[in-house]
Every structure is written in C-alpha cells, then in structure tokens.
Length: 130
Image 1 (cartoon, rainbow, N blue to C red):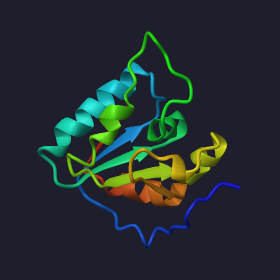
Image 2: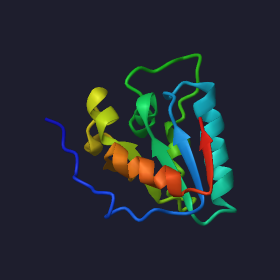
Image 3: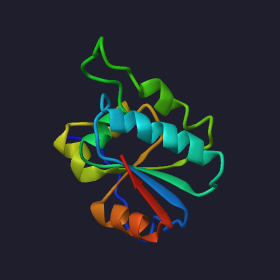
Image 4: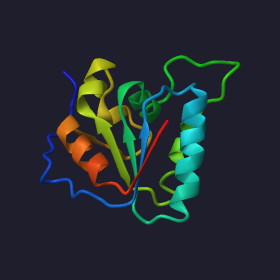
C-alpha cells in the first residue's frame, strides 16, 4: 500500500499568484517548457505553485525508463529548491494510479486530494498548463 499523507482543503491555504500545472510525463516537450517557465517565473513571482496531475506526477520521481534521444528533466526539477519554489502539490489519485510513493519524490511535493488541487487552482491569479 502506498504511503500518502492525508490533507484537507482547510489545511492548504489557497495562494494567489501563478499556478503551473504539469499534465505531461517526463519526456514531453511541454514538460520542458513548463519547467523552464516555472524556473523563470520563480524569479519574479513570490507566490508560485507547481501542481502535478495525470502523467505529470511522473516528473516527481527518477525516470523509470531512460531515453537516449530525449533529455532527462529530473535535474531541472531538483533545481526548484534552489529557486525557493516550495509550493509543490501532486494528485493523490494520480500517484496511486501510477504506483508512485511519496518516498520516491526527487523534490518536496505534498500529495493532496483533487479537492485541494481544485481549490489551489481556482485561487491562482494566473494558471499555466504544460
């Protein structure tokens, strides 16, 4: 059984600012654009939030299958801590779907319910999806 901490909408304070939502897996061109946008936006926006849903949750772990022709973006995701991006959230449902345990995360993301993710997304001033 996967370890996923419980969280409620009340526990997660909705943040105004920019939410960047990752829906694509690690080898998607869109994911590369998203991580570049996240790192750039973090220099200007104090309230930046990254949300990982669908295949996007796969970005939170080391790639299970390496690709010789596509870049490994895990190193760029590890840079989020250096850029002081601390509001990282992942869909509990999608983590279960892909068999990902929070102990595998390469960054400090919090597994939350879809209700919490919806609240965070709806409170954001800007929403970018990759």
